[in-house]
Every structure is written in structure tokens, then in C-alpha cells.
Image (tube, rainbow, N blue to C red):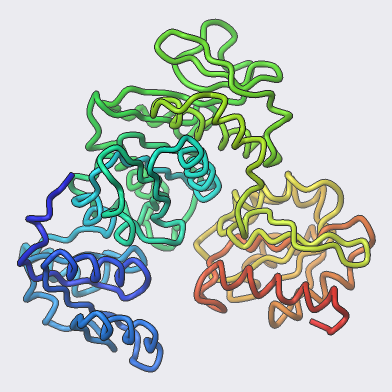
Length: 462
């Protein structure tokens, strides 16, 4: 887009010093702006961030947000910082513009942006689409909410390149011009209701993905998601659907990617395009067939041939922390689904695993309704092993129908789950909650789980 003029010579406050905030500050500095970073954490909890800021000679404050933020031309709000924070409310009252980190990065990204959002499946779909784009030979970067901030990679995208980014509802709250060439919305299920006052508010934030698109852009939406299809959003971009429900379009299908019998195929520009036999898609489960269909739709409109798409679908094994096979110990399978941070993600995980499950769940509650797990859990979950702040709530909602064991730590939970398992069972970590009560993020939680399982397998205890 090349709006460096919005950065050079400007004083910019960055609210939040996590990954996105730090990347935004460095980008601003590198482009001739004057960043000032503010975080509520005390200095003792920010040693790595402070070292990074001082290395780049970036001014900062810690231990709370002060009036210094209000001396800037505009603010960048990190995704982990809610709009209810007092300094942001004050800034809005006095007319200081507030933007998200992805908006900032979009100003300097010269290539096409392919943006993926949804309640579940974002990371898998973003990573898969990135692999397809890389396999096509087009210059490609992958980032966003997936781990590498968009601001850290945006300037590396040439005019003929692609930026494949995962975006969250938090990041979409403060966009102004952000308009992806392809916007993908995978699904809408209740999530982050600890931050939004209603499910409708959460959905509205997600739908902002499309608000700046034009007829030169593409919208890719899930025709099998009833909540999404009921939204009746006034899309201005060219609309594509994806579906794995063969009965949904018995006649002439609309433009998009669909499963027809054993084949995943597309209809674009009135032409039919065969892609792959669904049995050859390596990532398992119907939810991943849907993710594959969404990625294929985006790739096709970027001119990527179907044989390139098929070759990646055949070899792509999935992502870390999302239904990741860890080990088999004494005939018991261990699966890391630490990325499963809402109730619907847990439901997908339970349905995707054959046989009986001992489920490790809990963490920081996001106002999820765990009773929605009951039909699947009663059938397949032998025991619930509960950890973290939400364990009493989950017990209250599920404990009358499923045996529950409380655990004081991840190590305690893994050992108890293993002790309760029989050969052929699966110990599944799918928390249905955020990680912040016990860990810095879901990645740290998942890696701790894997390390504990590795020690168990090596006979050194958990």
C-alpha cells in the first residue's frame, strides 16, 4: 500500500510490549517514526522486552500507562490490550486515532494480503495456504496472529509477492484501511466472550475483515457454517464459498471449492477445476478437509495451479499444538491440542480422535459454555482431568455425567491421565481455555505438555 508518510516523522504510542507491540515499534523506528512503548507489567517481568527496546533505542515505560501516551500523534493498540483500558478510552475521548498493528503493517506491505480468520482452524489454514504459496514459487511471507507479527515481515513482501496472515478479532477491532486481496472467514462459534459483551459483538469484529474490500478483492466463506451464512453481510468483493457437504449444492454449484464424492474440486469463472482425491489430503478429519478447501480457493484466485495445491495437500502434516501427535507410551497415545482454546475446538478434537479419551482441560475461562461438550464427551471421554482457574466451572458443568479428577499442575495432570488410561486410549490436552493463568501463551503450555510426556516415555517421571 506504501503509506510510509503515515509513519515517517510521526510520534506513535504503542500500547502493549508483547510480540506485536515490539514489532510495531521497530517498524515505526526503522521507517523514521518516533515510537514510545507502554506496558502495564512491572520491569522485573519485562526484562527481555526491555532489552529488545533498548537495543533498538526505543523509548518506553513500564508498570502502567501514563499521560505520555497522549502526547503522540496516534496509538497502536496491541491485540492483547482490550479497548476498555482507561488510557485508550481517554485517547478516544480527546480524538487521538487508535490503530491495530495489522493496520500499521498494511500501510507498508506492497504485495497482496491473504488474510485468514475464524473461531477455529486459523493457524492450520494460514500455515497450509502459506505452504501452497511458497510451493508455487511466488515470494511469500507467513505471519500475523500465527506467531510472527505482520509488522515484522510486511516490508519483505515485493509487489508481486504474497503476505499470508492469520488475523484475530482483536486485531480487526482497530483497522481503518486494511483490505485483504483475499479474506477468508472459516467459521463463527462462541469465543472470547470474556472480552466481548455478546456473541454478536464478537461476530461483528470478525466481519470487519471484509469491510474495506472492493470488487477487485475476494471473499471466501464457509457455506457449511449456519451462523456465518445467516449473517447476510453486504460483501462488496467477489464471493467464493467452500463446502464439504455434498448435499448442500446438488445442482450447479456456486463459485468456490467443494467436495464432490471423493474429489475436492473448484468452480471458478464458470469453469470446473479438479484438485485432489480427499483421501490423499494428509491432515485428517472433516474440519481439515474444510480448511484445505478454504486454502485451495484462496490459492486458485492467486493463479496457483491445482497440481501445486494437490502436492502440498498430500504432504502437509499439520501444525504444532493442533491435534499434534506427541508419543505413544505403554500403548497410550498422547495428543497435544493446546491451541484448542475454546469449547468448539475441544469438540472438534474429541470427534477427531478414535477410541476412548482421557481429556486434560482447563485454564483461564473465556466465558465458554462447556455443557455443549456433553453429547460428544459422554460418548468418548472416560475421565476429565482438570487444571487451572476454570476447573471448578468445568466440573460444575460436566462433573455430574463424566468422572472428574482435579490436578494441581500440568505434570500432575499428565501423570493422572496416564494412570487412568489403558492401551489403545488417548490422553488429549485440549484445554478449551486460555493459558494465561499458568503459562505465557498456548505454545508454552503445549511445549510443557510435550516435555512432560517425553520424560514419562523415557522413564524419568513427570
